[in-house]
Image 1 (cartoon, helix red, strand yellow):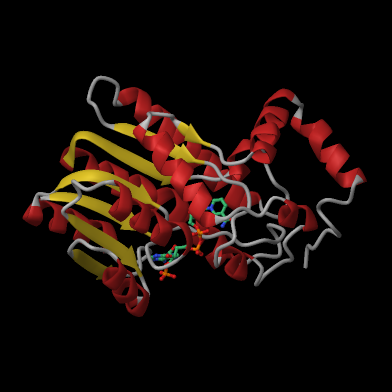
Image 2 (image 1 turned 45 degrees about the horizontal axis):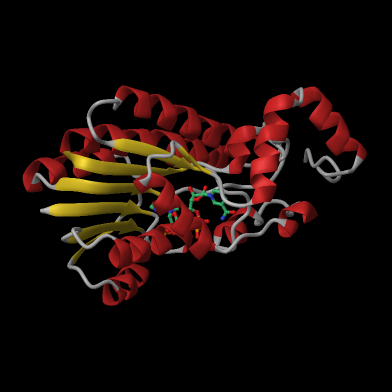
Length: 261
Ligand SMILES: NC(=O)c1ccc[n+]([C@@H]2O[C@H](COP(=O)([O-])OP(=O)(O)OC[C@H]3O[C@@H](n4cnc5c(N)ncnc54)[C@H](OP(=O)(O)O)[C@@H]3O)[C@@H](O)[C@H]2O)c1
């Protein structure tokens, strides 16, 4: 059975990736959709034209990875696409955010993504693809978004190394690195702090970001960066010393007032 495994399928870019794959990749025979909200998974199932298995699970529960491993060994799927889109971020200073939120970001964005990739690898089919959602936050350390940015740097670094290790196997990994995208992400991110004004300038459409991600994955680009603004940002972050960027951002009040309470 040729399967597409998608986490974060209940909203935003995970949901959109499912629709893109459904419309563009006819050889997928079944979708495995993960997310906590069952009603959203059922709604997506009605839209997709292929059979779906719905996993309404919290990926942060202790036994999630063990259960996923059991499902894989029982079903022995041929995974043609693995999309790791589950993730969240919280805006706020390190001292201001709760430990639970900070460790939750590390757990979901880093530990669970690594676990799903590792456990899925033996089941990846010939010509298969892994699409890991990193972020443009991976390009630069971000005060008041520190843990999130660090977790996404991990995803980018991990995906690129994985890709190199996969050379010659016909499986390819792409790290998707968008700037701000119009999804429910900021509803969650903003419960602790305010989204910096400049992010609104670059807010992208999830359909376009996901369409590019799929094209980049098929054409074997190890990174997918949507939009000129984010490409310029990537080069800027690579060439300029971080201290200098921080100084410039402080002068322009990009970080707002420090919130350490
Ligand atoms: N939007 C942006 O500006 C942006 C920019 C760059 C990168 N990204 C990254 O892109 C990916 C997709 O984000 P998005 O914008 O589509 O955000 P979103 O609309 O908030 O979607 C996040 C998804 O993650 C799932 N999720 C969160 N916690 C979970 C948990 N404990 N267990 C299971 N599933 C969980 C959510 O499902 P349930 O709530 O139903 O569990 C939801 O489907 C994330 O990795 C994000 O970091 C987003």
